Length: 479
Image (cartoon, rainbow, N blue to C red; front, side, top):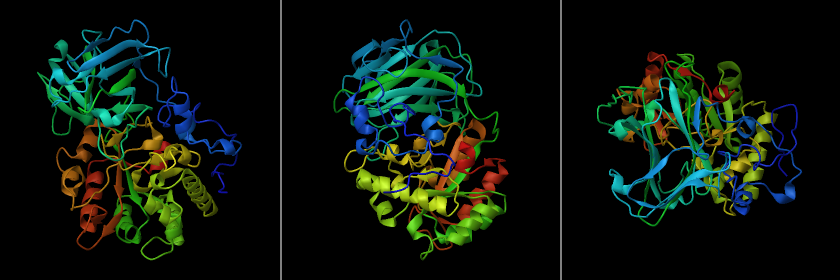
């Protein structure tokens, strides 16, 4: 039996994940019954075991300055040409008050660019809202993400003739930030904008031409054309972004697997600028060929301010992914990892999912909920929208930019990353918490997305420093 004790001096009584951390914990809270229990990750035969209750399980969402929770009289209307059914006062499933909005598409996929392709709910001509220094937070649930193509959100004026658009979610094969049958919270920041229309413009850093006076809002669903897709919308909220506390943006530099070349090649380049990183460690590979030694991990933590975090205990389990083994194996591996970290005085509460996969085990349990018994954050490798807000709305599902290598195209290419309009620009000027994920820092020609050349790594570190961006470990940000 693995030891579930954490680094704190007390051991808290076990608490059901159905009652704490409901949004973002991988559970459906209302109107789901057995579904919620099945996804909770709690073993009924083991109900007396203690659990580490940290920020991810007990912290709530940041306070909103404005919130539309879609209770009776909310005033939003249905719109769009791909609508099968809209229930504006849906009392069958909700997580706030007594109701939510549900909209079901007709299942006719289109290009997504016209009203005929969309199923929407909207508020037009309402009181003007100011979004300067603010972010938008949405709380919603998707019944079957395999039926979904996109979710968009708009703000604007003149019936949305002038509008900014966020791509809230794009469904992809494999791991998705939004999973079927659960309530999720998504924060939209200015740097996440992907389109504008009418008199509204966005510059290369995704900064908008105006940030206030918005009278119109729209939540839009575009399905995959494989049948109706039902989405429930619980809240549209306005929350602070992090520009006031981090005016040039916030960056965490993380590394998976604790490769030796990170210590040899990457760490000195970071120390040049006073940067500390987070290394996510596979415990049984420490002191083996090509990986950090225990002494190097201790030196990085105790002398350079690094965070030594968890990735898995056994390399074999890491290779299989937590989604490729049973819930019992995940529980034992995560528990053994926590014990190993405590025994070696590594103080982090942070974890990175092997392969970034936080879905379900082979026997249908929630990986996220099991890991949450031992760690208070879980980092994925999902780059959708790229950046987090602080506090993040789903701390067990932190997004990151991974595959940073000259072998890649797009935002993960080092030249693109540091260029005008790249993700560093977007973080500096539009705000947000950017988590960069590296694996290796090499002096040879990179062979794949896991290898970043030392010169490219140096270029990225110099660009972060030159922009005046604040660098903190994941644990420091969450702390």
